[in-house]
Length: 71
Image (tube, rainbow, N blue to C red; front, top):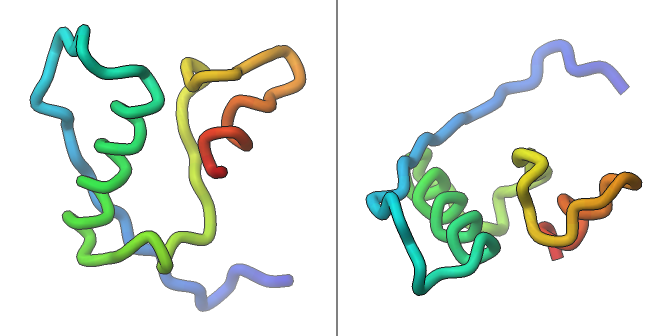
């Protein structure tokens, strides 16, 4: 499969909360992802992949964290 000629759209969103004691890390990831999608003019149905930092819930040596976030 070639990536030549493919288009990629990127959205950006910075969460307004700096110390969110009332939200889980997973909730923050979801809210930031939703904000970035809105910024790009996209919906969840438009997502083909999800890339995130290693601080996601469930992250372990096998790298299962991102998979649990996608679910």
